[in-house]
Amino acid sequence: MLERIQVLICGGTGCLSSNAKEIKKAFEEHLEVLEMTDEVGLVLTGCFGLCEKGPVVVVYPDETFYTHVTVDDVKEICEEHLLKGRPLERLMVKNPLDKSKIKNMGQLKFYAKQKRIALRNCGNINPMEIEEYIAKDGYLALGTILKEKTPQEVIDQMIHSGLRGRGGGGFSTGKKWQFAKNSESDQKYVICNADEGDPGAFMDRAVLEGDPHSVLEAMAICGYAIGANQGYIYVRAEYPVAVERLGIAIKQAKEYGLLGKNLFGSNFSFDIDIRLGAGAFVCGEETALIASIEGYRGMPRLKPPFPAVRGLWGKPTNVNNVETLANIPVIFLKGADWFKSIGTEKSSGTKVFALGGKINNTGLVEVPMGTTIREIVFDIGGGIPNKRKFKAIQTGGPSGGCITAEFLDTPIDFENLTALGSMMGSGGMIVMDEDNCMVDVARFYLDFTVDESCGKCTPCREGTKQMRDILDRICEGLGTLKDLDELERLAHMIQETSLCGLGQTAPNPVLSTLKHFKDEYIAHVVDKTCPAGVCRELTNFFIEDNCVGCGKCAKYCPVNAITGWQRDIHKIDLDLCIRCGACKKACPVNAITSKPMHEEASR
Image 1 (cartoon, one colour):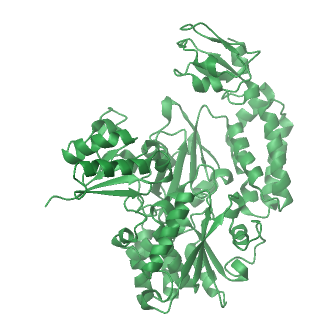
Image 2: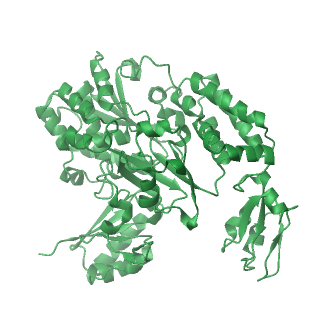
Image 3: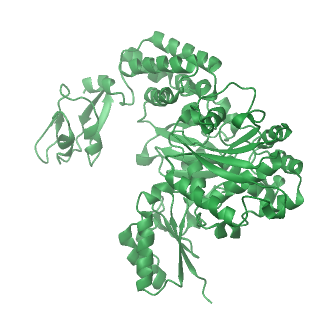
């Protein structure tokens, strides 16, 4: 008997926005016409990780990996591949070296150095069918624990595994559970922090969309270990797909008796509810999150007491983020020693990163701790587009810092990133090339922090605004060398006196760029120029000789500063130009470049 064909269609947010549901519907219609509905299974999965190539369709058992699939491609896939067994080469990924077609997932370099633990089921199962999770040993860890282990034995195994919080703090998960267990109370709570707010970060969203039951199972395990019977998932309302699939997963788990009263015939009961966040970045901080669930404005509280002692409604509470929880069922299935064997001595296991910015393979990657930055950027990420040079990588989002090419061979773990003036954070990883202005990058992250500050403490509320104002002056060509000293003074003051982690880490992007790219700051304040040609007040645009005279630049110029005959090289009137960059974006042949003003003046 022939093995049944399975067609897996990426159902993550990115692919859904590119008509993944319509693609699935088209498959259903064409398979019905071909009378193949019994021979081919269709599954809408979670994210495959290679987001830049979406929508992605993978055909099993041969693992044919199709990219950028459209509704119009479905008929040909059905007739040629599914019916006649002839895969479509035109939809396969190209090998960057020889332009040959990569025929299946096993040949993709993107996956070669990854080890998927937290993402193990994403892209492999239908997240809206609990049976598929159970078929992957889902809830087996919870059942085994309830029948064979005491709460203290569970915590001991967690401590031995070396799992550290993946939300940014990197604190021992097992020790955190121990503190909550040791707190005596008539009521305890478990909270999943799914308030993912870093710019460019979407790790937690992918897990919730692609494997929600792994989080539910882990929360129940935690509840048993610390003595809690109620859990809450605090998730951003901006994640509608994740919220919908979480709701379905909770309902299905209750129907199967995997949430609710007397789980697996034991005397342990555990339930989970969803609470929606309103998009405040500060609610990623656990005490602000707790305040929000209680119905108050999301603002941090002084610690101690820590949530493990006095948390939600004054009761002992354990808070873990999504990725941390996603690792837990596997640790109990495969053992703490197995998990500890992956990664480094002080940082066990893997880490999921959202890889974005100036990179060929934008997407989600999960690698063992200790993998180097170079391996992630150039082997997994495929390097920098358009043959540009690597300049820096920002890790940890607005709380992190920039790491330069000098440190590309640094193994990634909590300690190494901190030593470089950055941090692990939740896992955002933004790659920058030579066209990025590092002063502008620092201003972007600080601008985000200013907007997201809750305003409770003066250093964060006022200090970050003052730093942002200084960066504005520098980018406008009005800065002085004295401003650079003031930036550093304010940064250290905010680090030392802010109430919570958001304020304490807000200056990191500024301090790291001042350390590694001081020459760019000096160019802005002394030479009044932006070396990268990014800052509008310090930059001029001009048209190179490869202009084809199509006229698109003139069409999109809002102030009519561009003139030229059709098929002739056009010109920009610098007296009229407002340096908005619309012409550069519109040019189909990349003939428009931005340069520092002094370079244009010398032309």
